[in-house]
Length: 230
Image 1 (cartoon, helix red, strand yellow):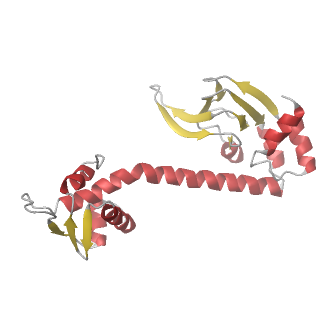
Image 2 (cartoon, one colour):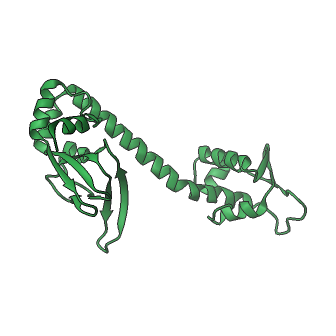
Image 3 (cartoon, helix red, strand yellow):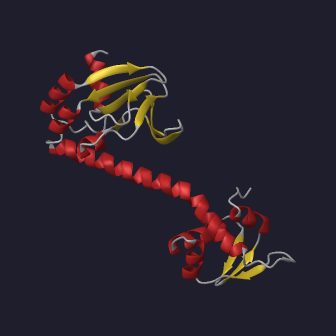
């Protein structure tokens, strides 16, 4: 890769965007750039000397492989993103593997060189921003994956209040207070409030204080069973 193109792609890296002229000179001397074919490994789990990998072009996937060969996805990286900083800071082995899901160009910095850059306040600020973004992305993934289960548990509490005979349209049920519902569903009170609001927005219930009018019994029962409402 030509130096001009390399400089342009490296400057797209959020971790390096605030680097000084002196730091850039060192980075260009230290960085190792390789082209990766689809399916090729970029980094291996348990590597105690894993580098910082910055994606210049293409797409990477990080995952954890179990002993029986099953893979648990961690994240997908696009152009301008980097992976491998946290293990370097913690002086720990890389906990996951990284592979290319598209033809990719990856720039890597060794642990030794990354630790030298960590002395720079501007680089440390960029690292802090990246780790904070990764933490928020992880929290959002966990929330998204747990939301259906929480919805099902709250819906099940409501559905359990329905009589066996739901004669007439829009049967009404009495529900306990949010603290009791949270305990019954094993979720937080905030989650109960969120689910009730979502059910009302989706025209499944109408809230009337401690009473609910069930507009769509079938959809409520599907949610309670952990199924898609539609």
